[in-house]
Length: 106
Image (cartoon, rainbow, N blue to C red; front, side, top):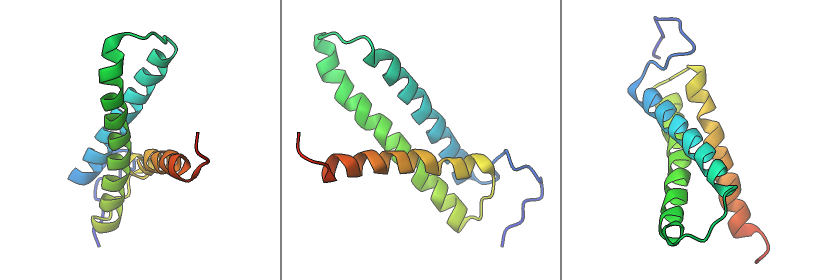
């Protein structure tokens, strides 16, 4: 079992832990940008092309952050708090995906 010699619960000690935190931060930034631009609803032609890819990329960042974080926790015994918090975007994205597929049709 790996022991953390630095004693820091705020800094990930593994490479996968750092990756998961980076992906989670990317997800949060993309999510905030998405929320800011959704208030400006216009029918610009570029939005029809860009927004679906943007949404898919944002969702993949959230899913990847949680999966990489879980891998770091389970396989490499990462114990820093930010890596544990990367599970939240994973749960949020799974909640949205399950709601989309299991909910009533539109």
